[in-house]
Image 1: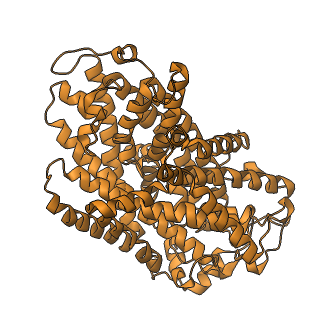
Image 2: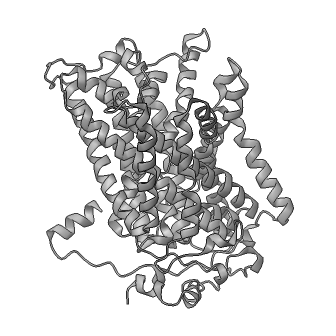
Image 3: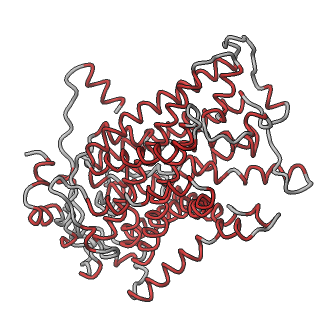
Length: 553
């Protein structure tokens, strides 16, 4: 009987079967308090319908959106080619450290709720509530209309009639909601196709950029590292008179932009409870994300820094379409005419895919919160095919906020809401790494072998410490520029997240009388399926095509 069939048989019995005690738990076993909602009464009914190829492609390119294709140009403009490269490399290491931490937690417990539940389970239930509601649910829900607005703006590359904006917005919203309502299998297939397009685009742009830089374009002009010499490798922030200090501030200024490009890298962990063989597939996915960061982000930023000067007039123009992409600027100047249209079409699919992924993430986080009694209980309901329909429909209300960007007055309010999620990515990464350090202490205190987990990074917990330090630093300095030319709006959007988060944390802690878990009190067993219950035997490839597919996916 397949894993999918097992999860479809009688929902009540399924929960009792899936959430049995893990093997070998006698050593260091901790009894769970029923009020903690860790046990079989969670009634988690989602089904594992995402296949290996879905998960691997989502890990490689799932949430690559306009942040990489267009946002990298803003990073180049703000910090120069070397400054942008340093910013992306630093944020890339922090993003990867966070992914390593959440991957180890998820392979131990591939269940609904992901890192907000892990924070509640191994750090403090109040932390899980605060990070789940404010940081991850809100940030993903409000990022969806932002990506829809970006997708509509990309369409203006061909149609600049403002009367059509509302129509395009409505069509995109309906398509995104439909994909998520049809179920996780449709979501997986859609993201698989979008990922193929994005991977083809970024690899094609890197290759085209390298050819143009070496003089292989129609105009035969070799660029090399010309723009690293003039106007220079580092751009000034324009905040202080000292040139070296100002260049350093320029790098700090683009860290948030770089983080936006890496946003959503943890999507594979969010989908763990709906993934076939989640432990094995997440282990593979994490290893491949390292190469995604190096090839797509680091190499991509290096290439654009070679192709376009940071003070280029075309780069300074804010169109929101492919016209402001450094790749498109270089391609047009090399005399290639048709590619900008193809690039804009591909970037449009990236914006659509990112918005689609945000709906998925927000709905699953909301569903996980509801399972543990931290959100309304009606959101726990799942269809017979394992779709948390009420959670999906609730989250599907947020995309309609994209209509606010149609009118200028509402657009100001909408942009303010969007800006409030600026530090949400850093807060989420901070929580993932902090939770891992508690998990690490608890496992050690209870005499458990961390290496027995399907995925374990031998550099832990130092990888998590690295992530904690830098995410805390990013949270504190993300709005530093506002202090050089103070304005209340900029200050609030940069730092209002911190008091809101603290209010949620302290308020929930007082109301529910929660406590920070001691290492010996942590529950590593209740409600967590065994390896045998989630993983099926790996089928060896029968021919050359299956062998290639195994390597790629």
